[in-house]
Length: 119
Image 1: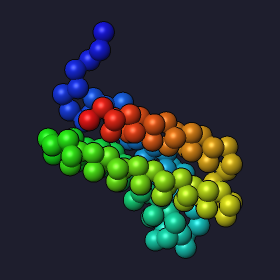
Image 2 (image 1 turned 180 degrees about the horizontal axis):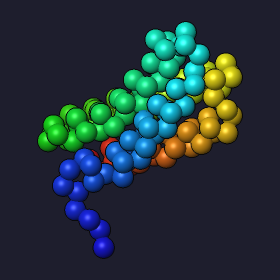
Image 3 (image 1 turned 45 degrees about the vertical axis):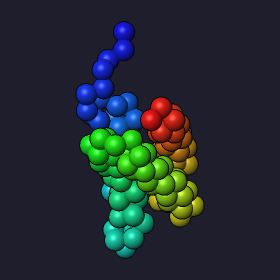
Image 4 (image 1 turned 135 degrees about the vertical axis):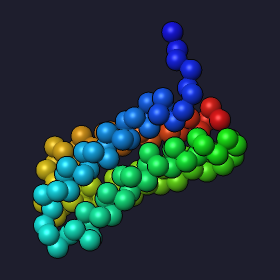
């Protein structure tokens, strides 16, 4: 039985991206203080951008606009992937956490791409 999507909150991709936001906030809490306005802030903004653009696109009610916001969400995924690797290389993030978050982002990218195709 499939559920009818009534709002963006019903989308698995939005729900998963919200989980990633929480994980990024937790991960960046332990970053050095000098990164609070640097990498930490950028990672949080990129993470927040993913579910925010999914939600905003959903509310646009036009498929062309919705797709555009989904493409922006994909761009934010790529941005966050890069920032995670930087964080790992700087020893701010454990390699295991980086791998888990990269896997989560890959999953979000696949779901977003599939949603774009369905539109």
